[in-house]
Image 1 (cartoon, one colour):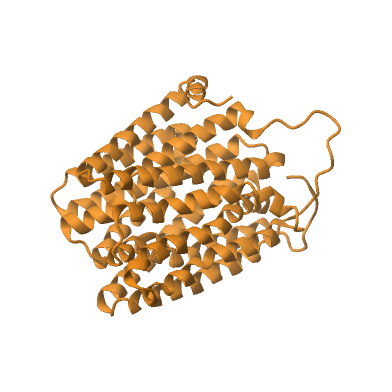
Image 2 (image 1 turned 90 degrees about the vertical axis):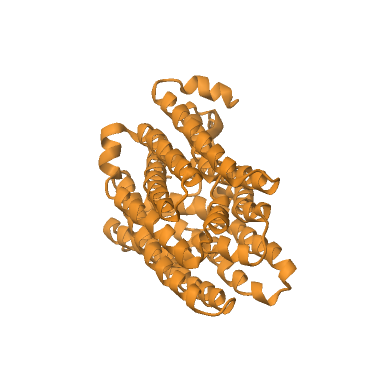
Length: 413
């Protein structure tokens, strides 16, 4: 993005610090929604399809508004100011979830779907602006390091929050225990937003009218097409069985909130450890190779979940999932950044975000739809393992110069 001046007090070190603390506080807030919301929905009587909708509909809602990110930024002098309202709207989900027990039980699953979907309309804009803001806040050479550090601190604080929440939920009265947890999550999320607002970035310069040739569409860029394919392959395959995993643990092993906390802790501990080494691994093997290998790891994790007869062995699957998906996420973000021109960041960020949300919408419906139609959960998990394996193989083909062939398969023009 072109700039005309820097805000007073601009400091990359200071920005780095606040962006890491943003992830720290949000990690404390996320446990309530990312780890226990599905258990809450199961208690409320949600069907497998409704569990899938809780995971997928926010994706399509965010997809609808992600294209407005560039337009939204043009109404503000900086990306930090532009991110405030949509980021606040996203955080209102915690308050909506708090009122669920006051509704009739038969309405509660639908309210949970609504409570996650409506705030996601703000998330679409917020995500686009936030990615641009991060690129402006630190130099290109620090982006991968920042992403890794944010991932580490997010996982550590999320792990701590999960343990506390798991103990709290198991030893206090339902549904008050969930209401208190969502209320605390809202406060932590506001602290995260405060740190976002402390970031200093360049002023936005309004684009002038082009007198020459029109800019090329993002979707016609061969390099971005490969990025888009990687996003679709990774996110659709990974999220295909995410909503049914808690249901499988609950039905097959009788797992409660406390075990869900340990399951999440195993996943996050491995994720935090992996995040410490992603920079070095990417430098040695490249982003695409990292992503491909990581998807094979997520496939192995799904296979363990499907075939194990011991609840304790599911913790190994959790650790493998956490480490593999963290490596894939960091590698994907790095691959996106190395294939995106800095002066076109708003447009490319919007397209990148839209691809993620589209995949997050499609993926959960695959597994939850099959489970809701009566397919055995073991077969659903095995199917998830198969498509994750396929995703890894296809991404590996892209590293061998098969990008053009894959773009044809995905009908990019």
